[in-house]
Image 1 (cartoon, rainbow, N blue to C red):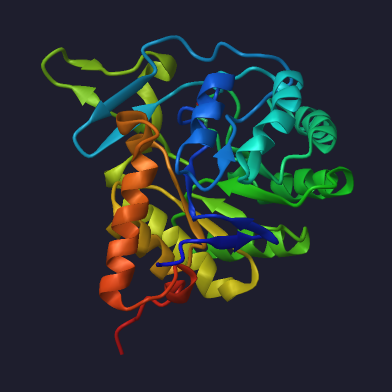
Image 2 (cartoon, rainbow, N blue to C red; image 1 turned 45 degrees about the vertical axis):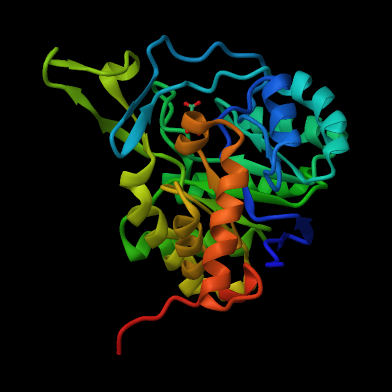
Length: 310
Ligand code: SIN
């Protein structure tokens, strides 16, 4: 048997495959379906103080090679998730609460609610590109540090951060320094590549309604950006801070590539929306096959082993 388990911030996961926050994880039914599936964890939708309907539809579009979305954080609100989380623990896998907010104080209020609910981990979402007039906090290093410091004073649960993609080494260095200073427990990267634009040439129109058609790109087309971001932080930290690789995972080889770059686990978004929760069993089988073929006894054995050319 190949060992697909992993450990993040002291929490053991039966396997390193889980949903990305946002994909089929808003309602109680969706969260329970993740619990009953082969996913190695349950990640909630990013939550805000009050329930939100999100942006007007159509707000998700899939195309060959990927997807674009501008969901606008539709979710049930902190109080509902805080009540739900304890019951999700019956699935005997880690529960990760994704914490968002429309302003800094929201995050602090959410942190207090989550202290009561006791998920295994909290993933602080600093990278939603889809709220009009609200820039992604993760691109503002000072603001990110201020917020994470305050959260560190409140949260009694290990917390990590979900980051946007960065495109220059200086930004990887800067965010890494911030995260070290606030003692971050893990990093999830990348969120969708924000503010992409997909065009329907026949109708000469955008494909989603919010924000004039601009939205977050996901799926196969963003895999190289995701791998580069995982690798860049692994190159800075090595195994000191675990990374959950997100972006472009469609099959077991994609998972393997993320782990080679330094991820300790992966999240799936677009392919989960397309295929439903049965995707986790397929990914686990395909990952096990490639690990066996390569002679690795476990997922962790190949973590970070990507070779550079001399
Ligand atoms: C959304 O709800 O708009 C997506 C969430 C995210 O990108 O963080």
